Image (cartoon, rainbow over all chains, first blue to last red):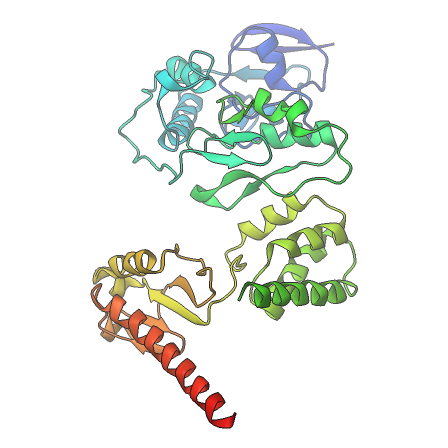
Length: 212
Length: 178
């Protein structure tokens, strides 16, 4: 057993476990978007789950830290919050904020984080960087909303986990990056329509299954 | 026309299949393979992506992801009249974006694409090296300086007329021979 201190609270846990999931289990909220417990190594691309660990030079993404005995962690420092706010503002600048018509309304991690970090959903700090198309058909039975997508990669990793190989991929680069399908897999055991795990795992409902 | 395009694509695929024998399935071979295809055929046809994926035994989505990441890879065949619109600093200042958009409208394609009949392809380039002539468009090998949005139509018209004249000429020769 290892005992760690998070914001002054001591927590008993197994050594080697993921710091972010330990914190979340103990009701210590750390903003996060791309984290999936079973994914090793973690995707670690959202740059939101920063914490300060005593002995380390700067804030580190907590999803990449393994718990060790005697670790002292701070989740609420000025530097951490500033990094998180900036990251969230970047996400929101590339996100079409239309909560009223969005199926993710009220269960959206962006809304939750904005409330927690006190960042307005429609910030004027950064120029909006929306993509041209609001809706794309995604083979064979999905709809994809590029301007909702936060590019967390959860759909890709889930697809790979379910099917062994991912049918989804990141296409393009930089601000033009989207999630895209290309071709199929030979001898598919489960069809996309039956599986639809990518749509289920999407935190912002950017992938929707088209039924009927 | 469609048949010749199909025949061309089939020939390209056959050639790729032949060339792929020289490459192993190592992950590191993927980009060299894509570069080889582009060098031999000037673009990556959709079927070639599937073929490469089969050869490497990786999902075609992964090949597509890699190919779209790099700007050097094209997905559209070059047109017979490749049009390059310069958007370098000097041309940009003289509203080259308006010229590019007018080409897009008149040809009905977006920058980076090729028209369905493969007559025209449209590209933006960073600098052609004759900034004194800004704004500049390059059609084939010919440089057109001091471009204006209104000159776009004339340029396309000229190419169309040249093409029709050549066709008439051919027809005439055929008739004379027979």
